[in-house]
Image 1 (cartoon, rainbow, N blue to C red):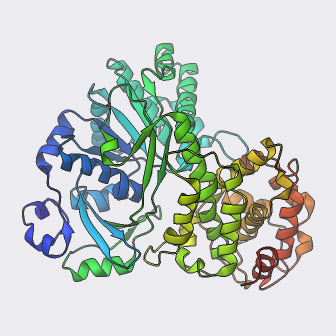
Image 2 (image 1 turned 60 degrees about the vertical axis):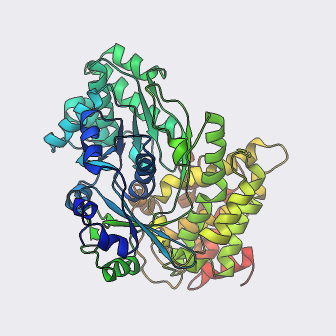
Image 3 (image 1 turned 180 degrees about the horizontal axis):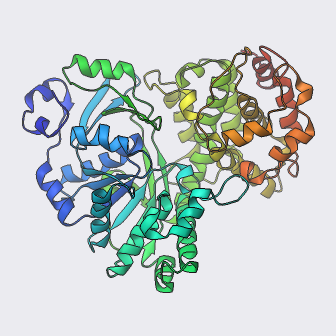
Length: 540
């Protein structure tokens, strides 16, 4: 059995294998999407294929929409070449249940995968045509936090961004520049309204997206590439809105046990690929079943009835409170804490870490003791119930093959949101003192220790990719394993005072000394990380 359009006609073997197939007219969906596109999504990875595309499939199954989604990738074009094209843009979604069972279905709501880059003229022209269409209601994004970044850790524009400013809309490469150029195409063809929706897992995602696009537009305006009218159109949120959102679903790297199970069912060519940009991806997506998406309901050109697929459509304050609950308290900080210490302690599974009493004490401390006191209840979801589900069901699920190494990717981009926002909340509250925090500074110290690329046994350890990794490791180059005294203040101060990294100056909020102390203790020699953990959170 091949995962492509053939499965829609030869259905019996798939159904015998326990796979749910689409019930809508796939050919008609593709045709409708070409003729009157309504939704383009940037970021063709697992969270899109395993969650967002499945929402549109739900609406197609209910007969509430007739078109699908155009998926574009701005970073790794091999995803389109090796995963989308061979399978007619279909995905086999495998939901991993806590009892070990697998719920399998083919997601076929993506009409086409496109390579969004200047080297791919035909794909780029398809995108331009879609942007010109008055029917287009929304473009959305899952390109990770770093996809919106125009500046480096020092606050300077990246060289490739400066090149985009100089070269203009017809010769740009960064995702934000490319999208701005496509918006300019829409403006020049009548300027129909549009919603520009970040669905990325970061705080105030719509605000970040809007800021980056407006920055590109203004630089192009200064350089004579776009008009003042275009820049004003972008700033008018009655024409171009930037709704905020909160998304939550764990979609880890493809697991060999899932591939094997699918192969045993007779489904062919399920092997993952590793692209030249180190994307590990497969024709299937294995994911947990729980999922949440909350979106600010501001769509000036209409939208799909996403609430009929389980999406919370609400106001900005509710989105902000829900996102802050999840990203700064109830899930993401716990994930990062497990990622940092899991790598240092040699774990290869998030679920396995939850069997370590020291690490469960750490995540309980970060979440319940230090996070929940500053959560604003979003009302649509209970923070306590949410974190209970995370700690008691989601993170310990042994059938979710998530790894600390995956979660540790891009940690420098996550730290200011996942921990800095909570620290800032403590600063703002008269009844709380950030200097009293214990578990959060322990995580920050663990991250610095992680950056040395030496595990707790003193052996070399690979660090996950991170746009700031090289720069931070250079700043820590004088620090030596086994020599706590090398973590001198003149080495650490440029890092601990960097508000880009932590959202605050750790010296100003009374936490630099605590982070420094924990960090130095973790440098003492083999086993020092475990000993420091035990001393602070308690012995297993």
